[in-house]
Length: 291
Ligand SMILES: Cc1cc2nc3c(=O)[nH]c(=O)nc-3n(C[C@H](O)[C@H](O)[C@H](O)COP(=O)(O)OP(=O)(O)OC[C@H]3O[C@@H](n4cnc5c(N)ncnc54)[C@H](O)[C@@H]3O)c2cc1C
Image (cartoon, rainbow, N blue to C red; front, side, top):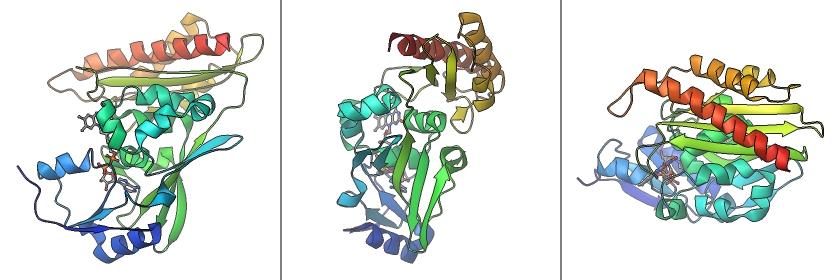
């Protein structure tokens, strides 16, 4: 099948992209890497009447490392983030998550912002954003605003972005504890497919091996990527023994509401959620201990 007819404009600046969105309203869509939008158009699952191409906007492509964060322009290609050693030192979960995203070819075109805006509940970058508490800077012709990941992801393939807004940059918090480790793991039918269930974790420990901060979450286990800050807070002050970690992982799994499909029942997905959350937490703990 081919896409329904549409008009196309290549924006030269963020302001121009926002003007075009304001002018064309609901019927317009931004085109970033096209790795999700173009197949969906070809299958006529979406039929935008107007495409605003943001690929040539240099101001949307950057990686800036700051003391307590990394800022990434929304149109930065996933492969650029994946290969950035200094960024990986600051926010290791990004590379760990990207390893599971599609294939080299899709990561060469796909953008960080495109993946977040697409908001697939099984996608890896939205889960990393939710676990780390990333912030999304949005721009429209009317002004700017910033949304926490928690508010940004509002449902399956749905975000709190308005039709006239462009995701401009993403602010990824970097933890400053010396002994910090993170991990990402998932189960999918084939490597490169969307996850059946995914888990991500980040742990910081002090010199005595006690947990000083923990964050973890699950993808593919509900309508949005899920983080469990209250359960993670229970890990703080412990030595993260396997029993404590397993308890936290299983407590999180019981809070999930996965759907069932051809590949896995809801019950199996919930079981996987507990197993993978424990695995991610243990791997993050081991990395923190080895720092
Ligand atoms: C074979 C294949 C396998 C894949 N496997 C995976 C996988 O395992 N995990 C995974 O997470 N993804 C996977 N993907 C999807 C891939 O990661 C996409 O790159 C990503 O979902 C969308 O990014 P994009 O830049 O291509 O965005 P596009 O496809 O261009 O856009 C996606 C949506 O986001 C909107 N959008 C894009 N940029 C912005 C912005 N700056 N502001 C506001 N809205 C914006 C668009 O309007 C559109 O609605 C796969 C894709 C393919 C083709």
